[in-house]
Amino acid sequence: MKRSLDLYTDSPETLARVRTAIDMGVSRHYSFRVAPPRETPDIRIGKSFGWPKEWDDIWVNTKDWTVYAYAAQDTSRIRGCCLNHAVTILVLDDDTTIGLRNRILHEILHAEGLDADGMEKNLTEWLPWWLEWLFWRTLDRFRNVWEWQYYRYLIRGMQAND
Image (cartoon, rainbow, N blue to C red; front, side):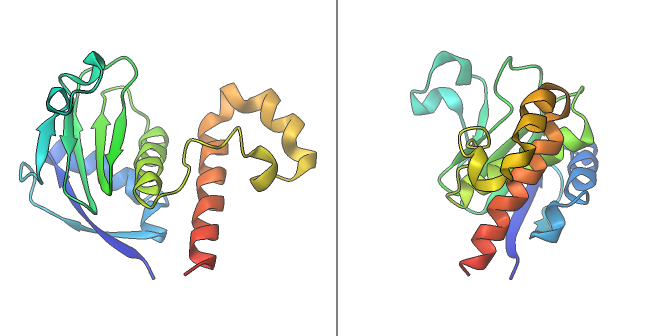
């Protein structure tokens, strides 16, 4: 059964970009109830958590089983986060749809309690041994492809345990 999440965005433009990304495969595994643009869940500024300085100006969603996506300027490294079961996605001008799709799914998998960061360290668990050489030789160029395969592996495992 698909988990249902509430989706909040800061504008119609962000909503359009996020919906396109979700339609590229995320919607096979999750359903989304879309809130009107500019309606927000419970959000706080990163500085209020006492996190490192790079989080000072990042808006962080705190409402469980919701996704909050907003247009942001380049934040160097931060592209999204998960706080308990609340997902925040930063949408940048230069994001590709595939990259955005993977970011959304990555943070949702964190909300599910799964190791979305473990693609490389858990390689032998999800990828046949005879593909490892291809993985390492193509990771830089095809990271989005490999991430998608790893996330699908995590979802299959989660579904098998339902």
